[in-house]
Image 1 (cartoon, rainbow, N blue to C red):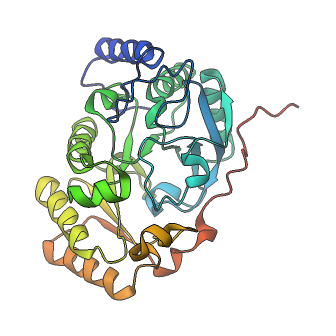
Image 2 (image 1 turned 180 degrees about the vertical axis):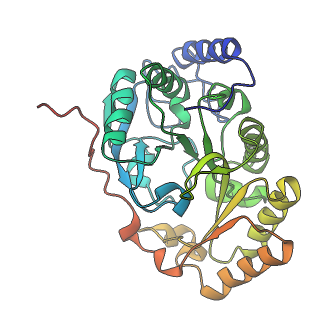
Length: 323
């Protein structure tokens, strides 16, 4: 579907070719700039340059404007450059699970999810495959594909990488995890996360400057920024909301999430993360959002903080089914 390209198709393709070359020499696709030759070894993201996917299926646990009543066509990519200590998808974030597929197969998956009734294609943590994803979307659109593409990401993306998606992505769904640099360093080993995320969201809003919904309430274009409240971190969360609201007012939506679930072993090194968020903590944050004047927001029921809401990464829908 794609929003109108503003950086220009020629420029977008030029950037893509450059990053393809760098991935096979010294990868600088993500802010880590690990300079791995991903044709021969894994990068800091835990994967090589082949697309690795752990699940492609209808997903019903996103924001209502994304999941709707039929589900979002979620493609869960393996690997991640951020490696947060509390990651709820650690089964795939380290790149240890999943099936390696071609760009052609990824394009086919888009059509298969559409045939199952998906409202959109939800590209989950595909930051380290942006050039390949862009190629797959290009090919799908040449074949007449018309569902919205959602880029569901960590917020830890370079502006140059995001420009490869200009005109291809309809909805950006980034995290904005922290605004405190030390917190970002402790939990994600990324002191620069707040600055990187701020620049990334600004680029996303440049590409998709207004939230547009259809007559049924499904989002067709725009930016929804997610923020996950961590236990004991209400102050930093308030600063995140304040920054986003002062910067973008109500041109974006903010999803204020209560679903933090302590994973096995996290409390051994980070005892403060060994519990779920308390209702009073979440209420303090949502009350603050109201005080700020935030109108475009999603909030969660506290019951979503369960491991049962984490998908089963069993490679469903990834390999081509023989008929």
